[in-house]
Length: 79
Image 1 (tube, rainbow, N blue to C red):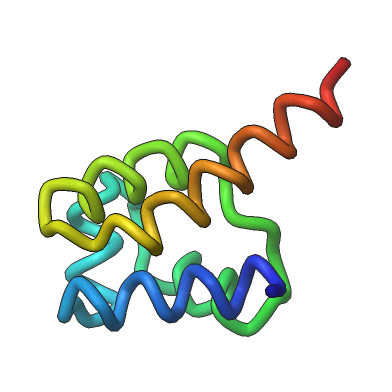
Image 2 (cartoon, helix red, strand yellow):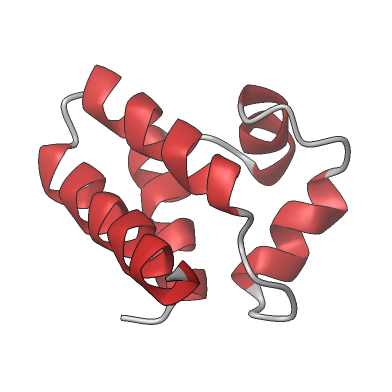
């Protein structure tokens, strides 16, 4: 699954609008979220980590696990 699609699904599962998820993730502009979901910009690593936390807090474990896989994959790419 493409990261943009995964991020969008996670946001929808949390029931948050683009401006609301931007605030929840401490992102300065919801424009960034739009660019992430349109696959114009890679989702920032710290945003993935915070998103996984939000998902776990909302018992969205399957999506949280998928996000954790993205984080792990990114870590592997760094080394």
